Length: 217
Image 1 (spheres, one colour):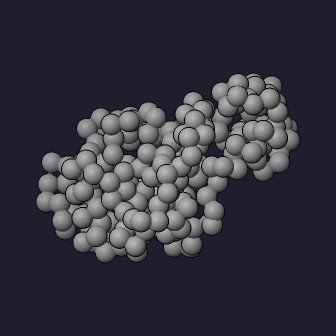
Image 2: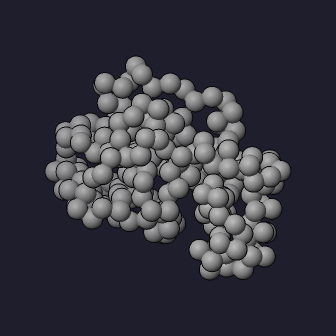
């Protein structure tokens, strides 16, 4: 029996995807999660998962952070990104950071099944129209992924707030922690990313943002 995890914050899409999967995989158990934290909880509890279907813009994902962190913590688990965006730059980043496939949310049930079967066999899968357009990421981006993977989810939230220009006291308010804790997180972020100030940290955070923003689903 296969065990898949659908990580997406839209209940109707999860239900539709689950229905499409069950029409092509007879022996299948599907788990669901709606944000990054619940995804990590399912991954920790279900050690026999065969596949993760991941929505990039799920709450808590921090754009590419969720994918990078999951690939670091669960290197043997195949991850397929399912997204409403078909931007080649985004697809290139996703594949460069360890996804084994990229399925547009507009894909048919047959395409989804084909993609998953290919990934389960150990191959990668991309839509035909983008296969020749996807580029490899730079070596410095691979180093960046390793650095970012070392951040805890809380530290990454702090980094995102730094990117938005919030002051320490504002970050403390948003996360309901003390300013001293925020300062400790920032110190750890600088050390793990190999930077010395906020400007350098913000530049790194910018590289993890996904543009253009995914279309409304």
